[in-house]
Image (cartoon, rainbow, N blue to C red; front, top):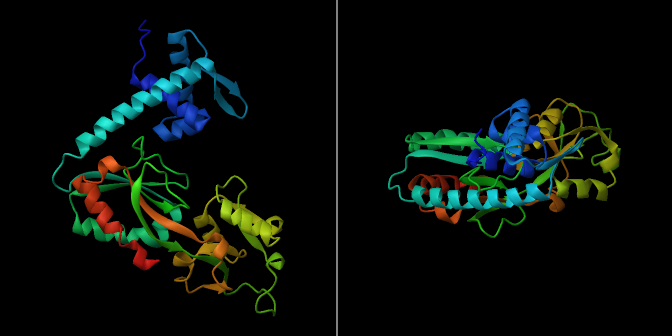
Length: 290
């Protein structure tokens, strides 16, 4: 039996530690829960030591596991630094560019730009990862991120494209009574699920006393938008998404408390890569459409 660890073993340990569970780690690696279970057991068997404590709520690294995770991070950083430098040596805009963004931005803003970009740069293939979680550009989960952020990480570079304004919307056919602007807490709210990382909206809904008035909660803004379009209730939605929908009506003005900057970000080692540069230049014009 070969007891020597290879990079795949280190990566498994690192992904489980970062994800906190086998199912989430499997998603990140495009694998399955049973496969991840077999692989982490095989790594522990090679070393003869337990790397994770198993709890009903997830996996937590043991002292030995934390040591291995630390080494795995160093290996990943060295490997990715080298890959980024080699990627920076290409001279023409061709190849794959990974873009991480949110479902709402893709649906309401980016999709037409992807079509146009394909016409302008046919040799570049966009690999778009749609997620409402922040992608790690250092670990090459994406080359470019287009997402809302209060302040990007210090090790990334990019530009602020503009301000995403948000307001409360309702379907035209939903009867809210005779008042032109009914009290917020009197409305049938569609809110973010409690696990959804949307601190500004959670805080605003508590502030106006409607956090506990939700008739339904959802874990993505795009799902909330679909619920409003169905006539289920009201929700806070990005103006770039809802203003263009003729079936929706805005209630009141945009809410300052939930306005957020839109950023276009990449890693410094990739900014001079031709395909990344071409992609940044194209999507950098999005600000005029907010």
